[in-house]
Length: 337
Ligand code: ATP
Ligand code: MG
Image 1 (cartoon, rainbow, N blue to C red):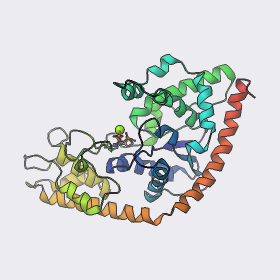
Image 2: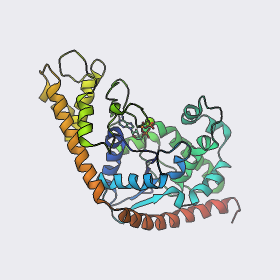
Image 3: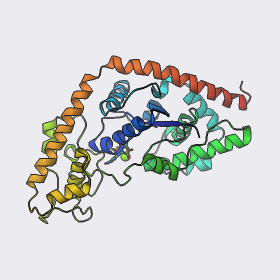
Image 4: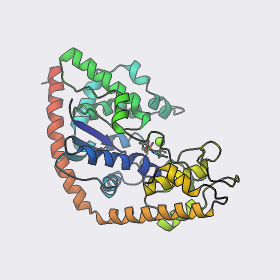
């Protein structure tokens, strides 16, 4: 098995507490755990960003996203490679070659494409083609594991199919990534973890939700964030229980508290069981959230742009070397070289 893990986060906008707890932190933990023995590629898929609108300046967002990884505790060693997709042209070139291997039928079946293009009179071709670019992102580096959200599993399956088809036709050129069921086992992600919207706790917290008080952003002023927690929607049942169905607001606060303190959810629930008012719980969670943000933001401020650019220079040299080698094999397969 090829020991490479590859992961990326789009840098279209600032992340929420949900993105932090559900994606960034687990990714960083996984990277730290495996980077002694495995190659860990962390890239910002900036070419994927432009299939939809970008808030702010994409270049700046990219640097900020990379600082997020560092502020979340990513340990850097020689096996950790940080790069920007558009600085490694082989991604786009292999995407084109794979475009000529993939079929309209299988690509049209992608749920993300159907959802993202729904109701759009003139959907851009990138929205249709980005799963193929994703396949190139993965196959260029012989990655076995690609920690991603559930919504991307279908794209992993597509990548596997393209790799197998290519290999059947031309010989063993690409590593076929692990099946999604094995990806899930590998990630050990708390699959059920979904931080809820503070005002409408039956929905998950999303960065694209318009209402400011629905979500905690990583750049929120800690005091302002504490106020958002204090004004979170709860219920009038007057008991503290973990019950996502009947008490999603309270349950969400318990989950956030458990995640931020590192205490098992059962322990947090046990601490608060028996209380009939929600004020003290809210105050405690508000203080945990503001403490977490203060610490995160001060770490973030201590990381210089220069530091990130230095990592990128190293990472992009490495990525171009590995990717160009693989691209050449694919070009040779088609007699382009
Ligand atoms: P958008 O509103 O643009 O869809 P989002 O907040 O849902 O934004 P995504 O970009 O869709 O974020 O997802 C980024 C990562 O964050 C994914 O791995 C996703 O599983 C995770 N994630 C998103 N929202 C939450 C949440 N509320 N709780 C836990 N994890 C989340
Ligand atoms: Mg989403």
